[in-house]
Image (cartoon, rainbow, N blue to C red; front, side, top):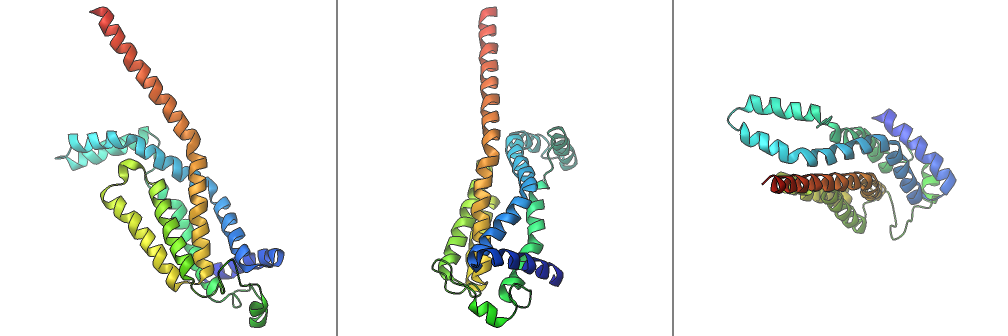
Length: 238
């Protein structure tokens, strides 16, 4: 973890030397990380979107083979393969971000040790104030609220409507609660990273899913027209 933290500290130092604002450096760093992860995020979002589309079929299989778990798993796996969906794809961006989050925790807790600033005097002389935040190395309670709210809306927006029940609904509140709690104990710089990351994820989601939603609407219209044509043909035959 020390190697990761030192590398992240070096990157953050380069950004700070350009901006001369610790808070702005954190935001720019967050955007860079999110942009690097964009290919994985696109894959994750498309997978989630596709999963929501085949959920009715999955429920049919579960109902049909409710007393045959092996057959049920076999048919669901077959459906995933036919639909070219990897159910684990949604976990990949989060798994990759975890080492970054842990590394950033150490960097923001002690930026001097990880090379962001040459010494403590340079750190104290740096512009640590950002918006209403007085010190980015200490927790900020207002930012903690923003972190919790952004996490809640991110989970709610990015979770398919048909999954906003039961365990997924609980998960939305759990993620929001954890983000809120972390904001009270972690350095404000890390909470700022997490909040900006959440907001950027929401923006990415709308950009990525816009063409997918348009494609889905076209397919629905085609299916509706097809059903109407079948009804008309049946009436003519009668």
